[in-house]
Image (cartoon, rainbow, N blue to C red; front, top):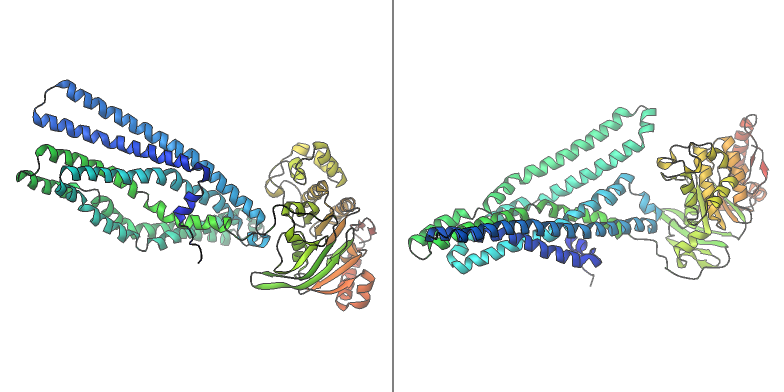
Length: 596
């Protein structure tokens, strides 16, 4: 029998972990605070009772007035302590949830992450997780306390007079009926509002990140219209939600706490017939007033409770997402031979690799070539363990990489793509990501070997220059060289270059090729290149077409045996000859010179 999924509220509480005792303490303090807020009503009732009885001792009234002030101060103190306790625990729990979510992203297949928008992920990791604060820090202690106290007051009223106890309850079912009417169908409105907010976040991030393209191609109007449309939908969603429940919510808030409507006439009749003393009647009237604030406070959290399901589902969509299964510990092969056997892989329902097999001996230089969209980058990412194969296997040193701890396997592979990301921190810190324990001297040596030391020194603050979001303060070639320095610092025995120079100009490409030549000496090199001349000296070229290995061999062997490779080479030669007069010489990744 399948295990039942916990409710949204249950899941949130399950994340409390070691902080559960703090929440228990917070609830206890909140109950004490609400009890202290109700206690003055008892003393007011005693004062009125004494006045009706003709008591004229000033000290009697002074003591009770002092107790009213004391309990009010205690109420403030207990509320502050409860809130401080719950918030201290809550922010620690939210930090743990956020850590779980960000850690999970590193263990999820890359495709699963890329399926989500940056705005959507940011919304979950920041706003959605922050929204859980209301549940943990407020609803748990405050709603619990504010529901408990009315029960205690009603119980006390029943001890005074059963009929008055029932009279105190008359408005509650009517108020609950209004509340249920409000809740009916409101989940749909709530979900619509949350979805609209999510879309607006996504559009906002997309608009900001794409502002350069928007300006260059004159798409300000259409892009802004999309933003305005999503903003209006967000506003309309909340307006429609409010319209749906404003009347029943108003009636619920007015009727449920309106205990006087039933207490006054029924109590008056009981006093008239002599079954209830005037003093007890006054006491019940005053105590019934104490029911109002806790009930209204408890009902005020209805929106937060309703939205919690959507919020938790979004957070759990990351935390509970399928991940790449890897052992925590395990033996790591001594050798770095790679082998792909009948590898199949799909993007969603679309299979893009159909039984790919290849051998990459340790220390060899292998190139993946083929038409655009044939599956070359997918193969590279599978080898880098950014995704898991659907079927078949990839092995390192004869061992399936799924049996090797992810950190240990990652230490063996350096992956450099055409779109390497730089974080908004210093150049030094970005390079040090290659090896966290590297000294400043080692960072600078890696920069020298990758050909970026000189331009780094020319920056405003040298190695301490902050590169900006995504490295936006640097040129494309500069970002690429820093990425190579990062890979060089890692000193991994397997290097994967996924069209690492595709978007660079010829001058920068020459610098990058020289850097790569130093990086890969004595290592296994896997290159995806759109310029065939840069990989013509590879030990083996695998020609990928439509997700299968169409042919393999050396450059000469493929020219003799493959019509597709021959046509690609001839097209490349024609383009190269057209640029011969202006293009500088570049080096192939293993160190030889290739004339462009």
